[in-house]
Length: 307
Image (cartoon, rainbow, N blue to C red; front, side, top):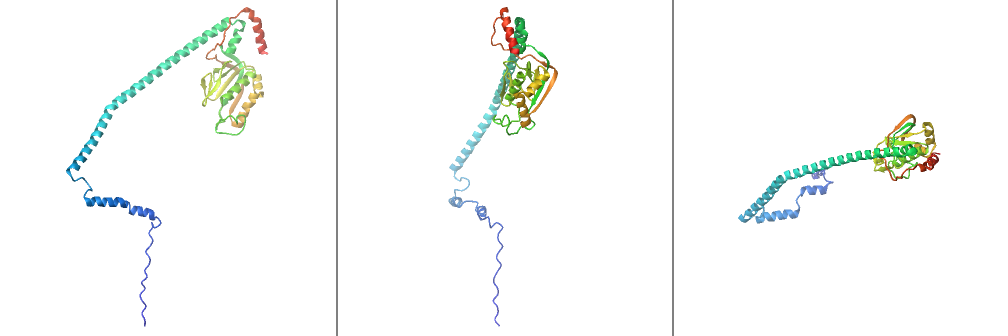
């Protein structure tokens, strides 16, 4: 009976978990490049590897170490010596800045006082030498406070200022159309003047015929004074007629469109009594001597301007 040869087949070894990462495995197993390995072997064979063995080499290494230590020591000493000098210069610079700031504040305070004094003198001269027209001219120039019936208009930014869409400002170039802009206040003020307002103030800032409403970045300036929202516009005049005329005007409809389109918040109310301060400064561009002969023609021109 023939005997079956033994089965010599063996099971194949299991695959390595990192078999799919042959490149990474090769890098890990051979971290040193072959060229560097050969160079290291040659240095070991020549005896040049490791610390220097000759006396000259040892002296050279010691000199290099002493030189490095000397450079580091000198650098540290210089930094320690110069630190108080730098600190003193910094303190001197801060003191100079504080001193110049205080001097600028003092000069600004003096300018404000002189400006107020000049304004008072101009107002007194205008009231004294203005004749019958003095009161009216002082009113138009903002040289006297005003009290009487009128309207109160409050304009404020929208709660969500990142809005877009069409409307009266779709081509303005502003990315944030939910904010009140200088030209919006310009239209509001012009609309109130056109509707019959006799005097207007924004956030306590009295407006005159020479007042300017401009923008500086995101801030709105009235006569170079920055204002912050909400913008409260007070106008003296016949309250009911002024309110109705403004809402029916093109500027009033413009403001309503801003409210409907961009959610700009507005409120208009009739006031029984409105108090407006004098203008911060009275600017006189031209002056002419007053004569009694000009009274008739001047009064006629005023009446014509009122009609």
